Length: 130
Image (cartoon, rainbow, N blue to C red):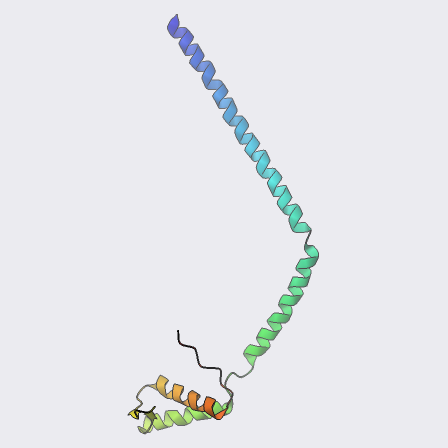
């Protein structure tokens, strides 16, 4: 008899535990639904601000497109680099104070741009070293 009562008690204890988990999950679902409703409501309110932002984005995009289409280097700066490249190919281009012969193409371009900057031609500023 004692074993039957114990089994009945354990059976009755198990069933309420299942019910509570079911209740908890339904409560969680309801809570998530409420929060999503609030999010959509908050998105609808600042619709006027979004319209202003898109017009601002369009103008900045136009400015960026115009800036990228303009020349970064003046034709005179290009000619200066061309002269330096020819000198390098001849073997007469020397670098800096030491006067060593330039063998690198990149070095020749850098010298040409540097001289164009000194002459006041339109050339972007040299990249800053860290």
